[in-house]
Image (cartoon, rainbow, N blue to C red; front, side, top):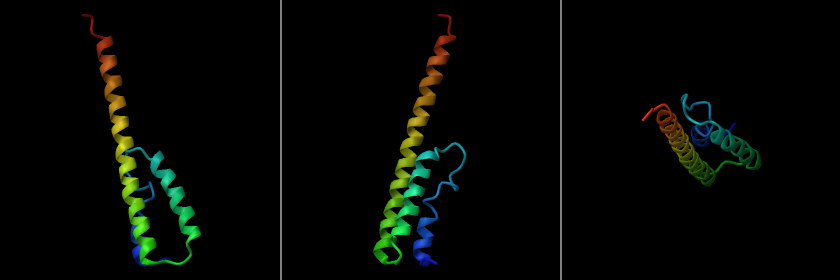
Length: 88
């Protein structure tokens, strides 16, 4: 069993809580990293909790970046397809 403060942070690194429409592939990679790191560190500490908090912040940034790219790609595709159907 891990320390409650560590558990309260690492649960959010998983991708299951992301709503539909958000890219989960980048979050899945960070879930794997989280699992590997938890296995490597068998003793909890305030520094370990802080490290995972920063990993969570990084995951949030990666997910937002992926979402921005996905949204831009969809918009560009929409712009191209709408221009293709314009007879002018």
